[in-house]
Length: 270
Ligand SMILES: NC(=O)c1ccc[n+]([C@@H]2O[C@H](COP(=O)([O-])OP(=O)(O)OC[C@H]3O[C@@H](n4cnc5c(N)ncnc54)[C@H](OP(=O)(O)O)[C@@H]3O)[C@@H](O)[C@H]2O)c1
Image (cartoon, rainbow, N blue to C red):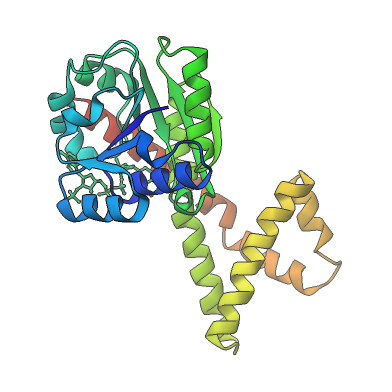
């Protein structure tokens, strides 16, 4: 599988790193194009892949062309690549807010995949939700599944509306969790724990709770009941979280982020 990356920044590099680490492709099957000479030099040096500053040149002979530029660069890049993708080539975009219709129109190309990845992709623990135009074959979808699998977990959906929803949940989600982690660490310090110990306690608790929920597959309420003894400390803490409206505030955060994702897509799509 020959892959081109247009944009070798944070996410492009994370994908390249994941693909190579899982030996899905060899370095000579990857070419990265970027406007930053420093980025290209680092990519060539760190991953032994080919690099170019010419986006059109990067497409030549590639089965999959990954668009990993920022939303504000997309218009320019699509104008440059428009009409240069052959019928057998697949464009895979991770650009937030760019829907399939805009990508197909902008590239004048039918075979397009749209992905919403998230930040832990950088360490192979990402969550990607993706969809594709009807022209993308089953074989190509399987190839996309294995590329995204190199970044963590992946889910294919046919309903593109789920992409904006995932943006608000798994895309923005790491930031919500970081805020919760930060707040818990500060609270632990407030009651007297040294900051380094507080950090370790909180991070391992978040990680352990998520892994436990994943491994057991049990409903979160059931797991919560398991650690809530009658009349105990956890019950006291949970009561405060309920009184403070934790559920409602998390719901509001997701609703607001979803509205914003739809609004931005509308604005970007024009
Ligand atoms: N980072 C995340 O956690 C995350 C999560 C979900 C989705 N995404 C999506 O992933 C995409 C990439 O994000 P990122 O964080 O990887 O951005 P990034 O680090 O800024 O990477 C984009 C790269 O593209 C380069 N570039 C800009 N214009 C270009 C052009 N015309 N031709 C070729 N290369 C060009 C940039 O160079 P300069 O820096 O010199 O401009 C930069 O090296 C975004 O659309 C974002 O919505 C990111």
